[in-house]
Image: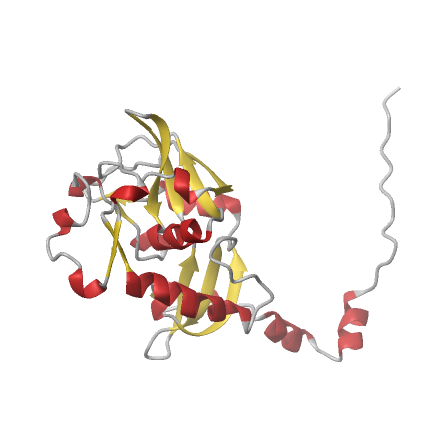
Length: 242
């Protein structure tokens, strides 16, 4: 005989109108308290650093995160993540490989000074660079027009190298650098089954130098190990400027 599962009643419940009455709010005011964005008013997609007067942030659904990642293209129009799988997990930056020769002091100082205050004063979320998830962020551009940006954890790709299967930083170099310096782990988007080669040779942190932005080489080939620029991932449609 087939077993019938019994759905238990919740220990308590109330009508939504009762809830609003308790808070002394109407539906419009409740929506305002939730800071729900009006998507039809959006005019720009910006890097997060250019977003002003942040009004709302919403965690990204896994399905939408995957949807925007698989559509990332290289500069020569390949789709490196078309067949990839993605997961958010904690990684140890010391175990990661990387293709950039430098980290820039102004960039990682800005992360320390600005990111913790970007969300935490207005929203009930952690603001740690080591534990932030993926969010859509709504605010305004410099002209006051409604705009959207995105905060994504660092993105790392799994590749088979001469040393075996390795995780390589694709975006989030400075967040990983700070986390490494603190001896901690960091939440990252890990992409597996990437079908396009990484655009740089992959090195250890011992090959990376911290320099001021004033010393940043003008020649892009001097900023990366064995650069193949055509394989660069174009990240602007992720709403980030990596």
